Length: 333
Image 1 (cartoon, one colour):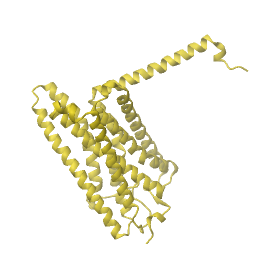
Image 2 (tube, rainbow, N blue to C red):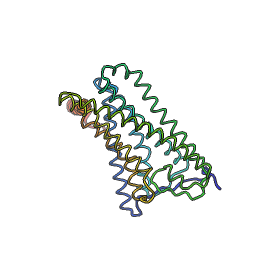
Image 3 (cartoon, one colour):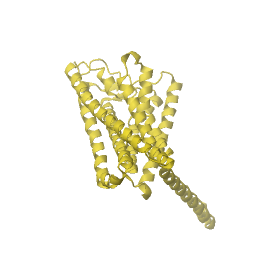
Image 4 (cartoon, rainbow, N blue to C red):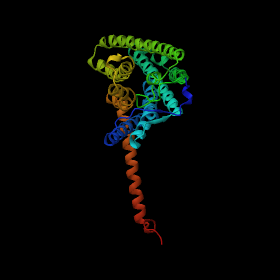
């Protein structure tokens, strides 16, 4: 019974055996990753630079963008590398690192979404206590708790998973390292039960957060429906719907990926669902949060306008300086 640490590498699932489709997957992932990097970088820059966005909601949105960048940078680069060069291998340490960082960022993102739900609940249901309950110190502590919880969850799961003895080959039926597919290679009954027990504990914690989110939104919708003016209801809904859309996409895809019946499980379906929860949300979240957040859109537009204006002015200044000084425009021989 060989220990998992004796393995030099794992074999990831190839998207296709045809070279043309491999290149298609590479360009598709490249487009998605560039969209995610651009969208989340714009949100990070806008929130950091614009004083009007220094609010608890946008503070947590900044941290959410960081988790999205972490998720997309954990799984996609290796998949793009394998598709481009026609390989399927990942080293043992690389697989462990990929699993750890994916669990870390996914866990932190879920806890941040729960905190953002609490932010919306306090803003709509307890507006007079908003400044007290969500002061700068409280926001910093909640964000730190989300990151610490994600780190601890990832550390425990990664250590437990890679302590298993694997005796059923090294082929993973996924394009990145994922716990369910590593467990299929295990032949250690005791270690398998330990990992399953830890997974159940984590699932219970996730379920508690989910119940809190559902309860909060029930209270939020009750409070919104009591607002007398249509404009007030529209404004309240506009601040909640983006968060609700992100939570729904994130939770539904992860639940379906890990709790779907074995009877409907297949490699193409597993591959598609894993892309939906690990690759697509980081690219869609900036768009979802920007659609109804007018302050964020104005900040991004102002930042982009200032950037392009500065670049154009710099270009014309350089050209004018070169025309006035011909010796600078022509190389000396």
